[in-house]
Amino acid sequence: MTTSLEPPAVLDLGRLLEHTTRGLAYADERDGDRSIENVLLSRTDSETSYRRTAMEQLLCGLCSELPERTADGVLWLLPLPTGAPDDPRWDGWPEGVRTTEPPVCLQHATPPRAGVGHRVFYAAEAELVGVHGTLHPAPGVLAAPVDRMLRFDDPRMHWMLAHSYVRQLHRLTPANGQGRTR
Image (cartoon, rainbow, N blue to C red; front, side, top):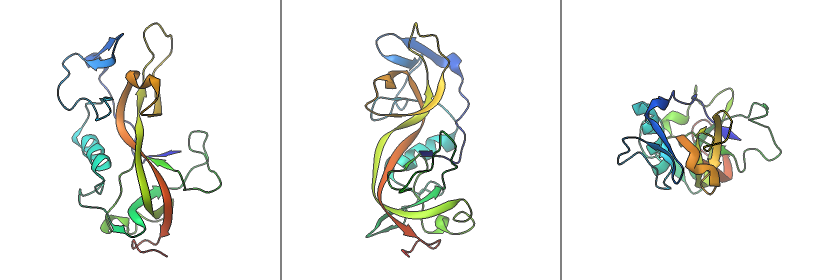
């Protein structure tokens, strides 16, 4: 399950070129257009760029301060799964949940954010595992682009235009709305 509170950004496809040896690339590609894993990043508004930085550096996604940390890990505010096919419920939720939402500081883990439809957890492990974005078909493949999460080791990554990073959370401990372990 990938949790996200924001829809993907709108993309101007006129700025993309397809290369058979490299995958997707901007015609005027410059420093900062690719992730540390060499994934093409969408050129979007400053908020999307800010959130990617927060995910990459584990900063609060709302204020850029350091997130709340305890012996149980880093604090995360996670939306509850909806049960939809692309957002399933499963036994053991939230262990292993994948999220595009950055961690939060103590101030931003309090109500109303940590209310109906959300739960607050500390995650001892928050591995950067992939990206969420628009997967474009390779040349010669007749298919429409799709919104999807891919792991960094996926061979289709060359055809991904990433909007956000994805972290997989493990060893979760429930917290109350004040960021303290129950």
